[in-house]
Length: 505
Ligand code: MV4
Image 1 (cartoon, rainbow, N blue to C red):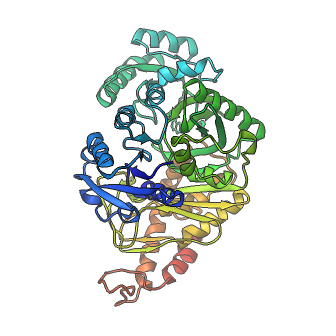
Image 2 (cartoon, helix red, strand yellow):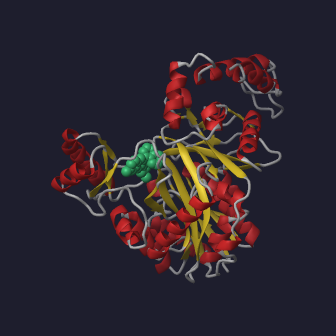
Image 3 (cartoon, rainbow, N blue to C red):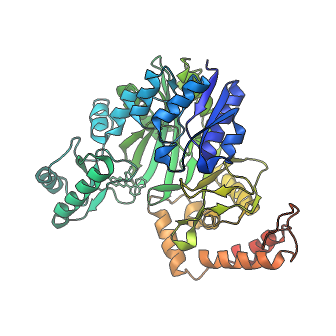
């Protein structure tokens, strides 16, 4: 087992990994940039080292600096978290060369999955189902001929892309040439690789992904699915486990396919196989993510497993401590991603100082967070503040629990997307699990238009703020001795705002 683990990340995920290290008896090492000296992950770790200025390219993405720091402090492993260097094969290779264990798959497996066309070819033999299309890079002429034979609409995708980057929807033959050319120049600019492939377009699919876990002795298991259809611009907003449309039979079939795909890539450690699922519940392989995902907690809650513990045990060479038959899905978990962004202003990032923070707790509530009252959210990184996760015996109870927790949650001083969750969770379509990747866009469009029966987001925010201000004592300072213009000295604002504004529909 390891003695000391360096966490090459920041925010809530760094805190999450530090906690696992503490539980397992490993010393933890944080790294931080200029603007993160006061960040929560720095104070939670056993040691912390400065790695550079605010821009990620000079700090959290600085491979040499991070390896040098790990060497200097004697770390025997590096956990990359998600984002930053987590899917960077060169970083995994640099760790190996420095004799430091990278907590994740091999550099070769990462590289293979990084190319969507190579990944498709590698898993094809394992009987993995795909959307009709090409498994190799295409010229414009080849794309034209293929699109004509499979029929429009089609999607042009960048082989080096993923997560929605460099994609183009093409509805007719006449649009193909210019879509191909812009996609190619975009891909060249973004990935230094202009390879494009093409697929039949699936209209409003669900996005459902399977968590897999493999040890370094050839054992692989799947840990059920996550429903990730509630998203906006390829940014997930709500995830849940299990999916309401996945029964035992479908879970078994998708799970076995995901394990086969991972096996054919020589995959180890934690990974996620993404699928599109159509209205007839046909499923199609999209891509494999070679990292621990943001939404891993919903899988942890319904399986009772700790994915970060398991990642660390696998990386240290241990065998998986259970078999597929031992994995049971129990209850229902929902996660809300709380972002510092303004839903009233086109979700523009809203960094700044958190002047007041009231966090939910109680039965079935977990919060993975990297924020605290008084901290200033920097504008240099992804604005994810916190993940609020509700767990209950069934989906309806999990929704009720999440709504209760959201009512307890207050973040003052910055704009957040908290009001959006209140609206999603009271939506009848969401309650009935009639969700697909177009759900949130439709909901936001109806909020803009004003559906007559309830307040739009703007009104809810305005009414809440007015009631909050009215219920705040004039000289109240919340008891922390710092002068603030508006601070909730008591909890009246919540009760009033809830009854008067949020429940008025
Ligand atoms: C698609 C698709 C429809 N048909 N491919 C977006 C992210 C990237 N991983 C793949 N994506 C999609 N690929 C075909 N052939 C629709 C999407 C898509 C999507 C997928 C998952 C989650 C949200 C999405 C939102 C819009 C489009």
